Amino acid sequence: MTAGNTFLPGCSERHSELRGVRLRWFDGGAGTTLLFLHGFGGAATNWTAVAPALAERFRVIVPDLPGHGCSSALPAPPQRLDPYAERLALLLERANAAPAFVVGHSLGGVVALRLALRRPDLVSGLVLAGSAGIGSTTRQAERMLTLLSLVQPAKRISRWRRAFARNAFLRRLAFGAVSVADPRALSPLVASGFLAGSALHTDVRSAGDALVRDDPRLDLERVRCPALVLHGARDRQVPLRDGFEYSRRLRAPLRVIADCGHLLIGERPAAVVDAISNWVRQVEKLPLDAELVR
Image (cartoon, rainbow, N blue to C red; front, side, top):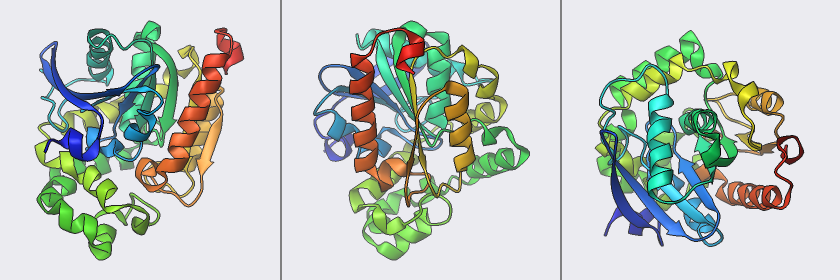
């Protein structure tokens, strides 16, 4: 049974060669395209509680970012996150899936912003879920990302992911420190989905280094597509004040999800699905004038 069958039911697993990167991605549903981008050290399987539900209403494209999951690393370490965005632009064109609403979690939020800035013709709108990029440029964040890149705790325990996912005490050990507000809120399938891709990573260090160097605040005023900001009220990795700053700078609505930490896409997936679905439908009904859709 493939990861697509297990964690992303209804989605087909595909592989594409995109400028020196062999990218794994999943494709399901029909209609308006939603492109889902996971966070640092994550994989496509992080979206197991969100993407299949939205595939009932939309077309969903869910890739492993370069160096993550089953996708190969970039040919050379990047200075910023633009090379990740470049491969996703090629993917949307190759899959005939543009324009798309791009949903980014944590690191994926900054990559989504880079994609919207580089190729606005491919992006209908942005959803930033617990997006990194503001606090990520601090010295403390740099030390934490470097440590995580070297230790890779999720990769070390991924072989025992089923045991960790099924046992409440082990789930607390794996996710309770800074990732989630309540590890009991993670279902065994969702917890396993967060750990499944970690064993396959080939180069997360490059993504962490590029994230530290990439301050999106310098370019947010140039984002012209509509945006929605989602944030966990109890996020200890990316503080809620970052969500407010994104909302202010992008002139975008902010939805704060109560009793929820950084992994909001797994802790409160029903709220995330509802927010994304309603917002996309609302944007699609509005005029295309950028000032109106915001």
